[in-house]
Amino acid sequence: MQKENKQGLIDLHIHSVFSDGEYYPDQLIKLAKAKGITTMAITDHDTTKGCQYIFSKDASTFDGIHFIPGIELTVKVTKGRMHLLGYGLNVYDTTLNNRLEELDREGRMKIRHLFQVLESDYGLRFTESEIETLLSANHNIGRPDVAKLCIQKGYVQTVDEAFDKYLITSYNKIRGNYKGLSCEEALYLLKQSGALPVLAHPYTLELNKDELRTLMRQMQTLGLKGVEVYHSSQAPEMREICHEIATELGLYESGGSDYHGPTVKPAIELGTGKNNNLKIKKLSLLDHLVT
Image (cartoon, rainbow, N blue to C red; front, side):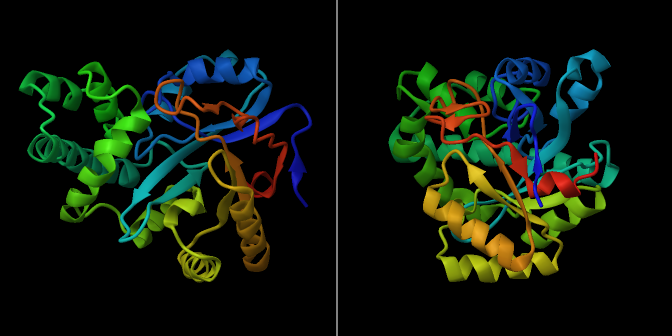
């Protein structure tokens, strides 16, 4: 039985400026209200700072919004990309935040290495001042930040162009040099912080149906509780596969736009995804989430 959100839309996958989004959390809540969203989660990459920021605000900020604290952890895999969403976590959990600080330091080293590859392989030159300014920013640093700098330098016109031309291949060249989070550790960190762990956008794993089912069954033994069935970039066929596997394994269903803002992912709108391909009003996840 899935709880229906009769008052408005649900969006449980949103990014703020504290990772690679473009708006502050309170701005996102204001935008959500304008778009008819009544249940939302901020799920910044590998940081709880966005949720901590919003919890420091006056309670009136949340009027009309059921806000769920969240996070999206990056998991190291040999093929494709794996992200794990965590919902309802204690955003002040010491064990989680200490590990996230370690990952942040490693991530900044990785971005510096990425700049070296961009220069050696593609001749894209950045001054030390430009690199230091980016690396000293008070938010989670990622490839979208590098993409934006590429736009400023005139190397590309859009974030997508930067990824397609340079950032995917350059990152793949260096990704093996950094430890990152294993699936086991990521699930442990989420569980011990009180979060309900959910596999994000399974299409990025680049697995067939049988491979995905096997992986999700293995992850379930480690604490996986749900899967993101509805996502702006997940094709209807993959949604159906995820729904089928979730039903078979007894996993909760989740969903969200993966909204970043008009520059990083301009085709994705908060709450409604790409070309209105999302209109989530009920999710089984919400029946089992305590916040």
